[in-house]
Length: 86
Image (cartoon, rainbow, N blue to C red; front, side, top):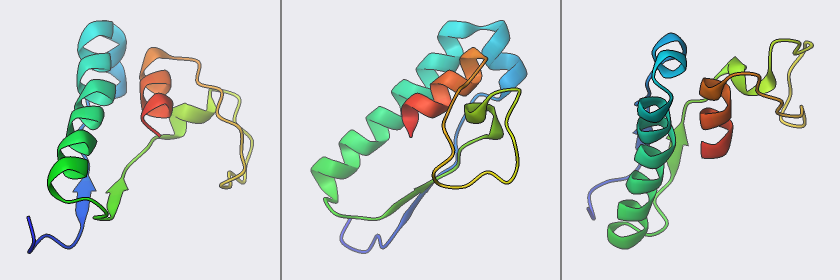
């Protein structure tokens, strides 16, 4: 843990599969991220984490450009699970 400088969290169940299996999408996308962050907090407090998100957090009617201040309005369970993770 001391030699770890940065963590990239890229794991996810993608949109189509998350929509087909709601429980799996929530378990992997939200609960998995929570578990990772919990371990990092315990073992490597303060380590930077970079996590990927998805355009799905902004919903089907997202306008461009999307910025850090854009409101999240997911219209799918996949988008909701990714938004909850943020």
